[in-house]
Image (cartoon, rainbow, N blue to C red; front, side, top):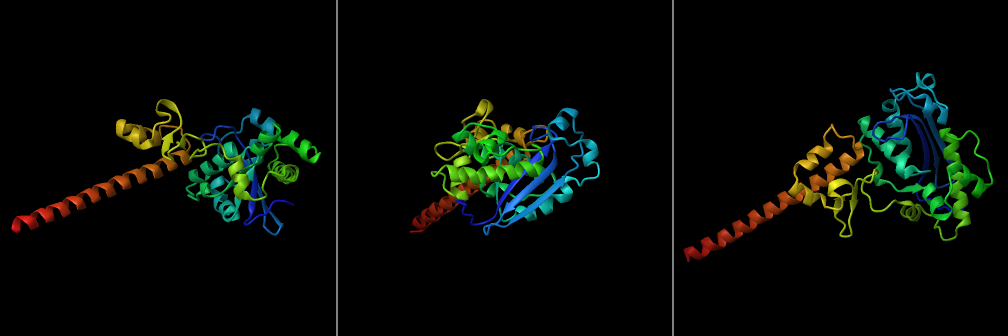
Length: 282
């Protein structure tokens, strides 16, 4: 195997009540953790989403309301999930756009502030799309000559993703077999949050990445429209909790820098005043 792991890689897949990151809930989670020594560990669970699963969604993944009625809620298993992935990087199929943002949202919603964004992410779909442009079912057939039985079962999809990643590394010599490279290769642009509402510009300044202030620095917008930040992070907006958390962190840094600058100015004024008083006495 060409993949060299310095720490575990947790390949995971989520099934949910829908595709809206801020409104939907997880109904099944499966994690296949590959350790540096090649050994594997598994975690999987149905999850009671505490909202209705529509018939349309059930037709996709086969999980209905009766299936999850007695399952634990996400809040009840959140700490177990965090412990399982705590020392691991994350991988999945379309995970940068869906699974990772939804997992982060559910953790924050459960009051667990484990910071997923400090990890490296490998989105196997992005490798596939950059190389071949296909779906997971086609990827498994293309790379491994396997059929994906029972697609949309979380553990089956996680296993298929692992098989595809291993085959991709064998097929493309230019893909380096380390998570640092694969994470950068599959990253979507220069976004700060999972939803892509915040990003860095060419000067490495945090900017809004959508709407009327798109491309403007967060610091600049706070000066010209101070209420925009308050509106953004208010409970009335449906931006993801992770996005709001990242914006709050950026604003805390801006406010801290401002206070420090003011303190430096005061200190400089005190020094000038002291020098003036000294010369007056002479």
